[in-house]
Figure 1 (cartoon, rainbow, N blue to C red):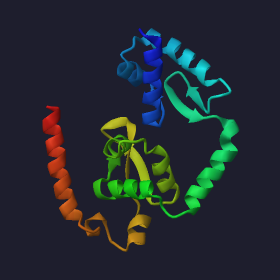
Figure 2: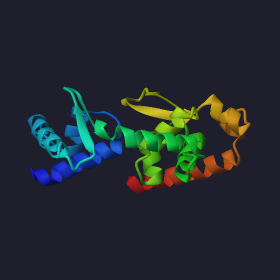
Figure 3: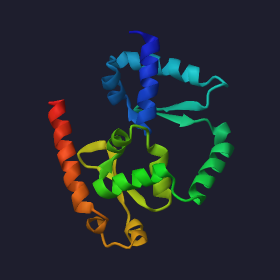
Figure 4: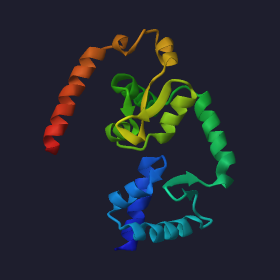
Length: 185
């Protein structure tokens, strides 16, 4: 096992996941044996504990998650407060549109469509009461996101079917999804 490569893969996996990741899934995704993950996590935790790093590893017997260090709470709190007091950013509008037109949708699907991690943006939309999260019954460790009643009220529509060009967009997305699945096969 190339430890540098596995550490980089672990960091990327935890970053893109944005939520607690089970040890079992991490082992599977990183192609590790059960006894290899613990050592990898120890090394990653050691490297993150350096003063020059802004992230930390939260871990227990079953899950791991990449988080910001507590000493940065003041600056991060200011950032979040400013984000929530401003109008929706272009990124927020993009995520909101994906959720509104495709919802219920997983964060992985949102990230795939945008090409970037959307955790922070989704959390901001949830705090604003525009998006809600619920457990995915097909994937017990995942969540799905959908627009809230407040979102529809704010938009002045009774449901997603009344969103502008809803049927047209859904039809084009269905064609796109079918083409994507054919490429994968």
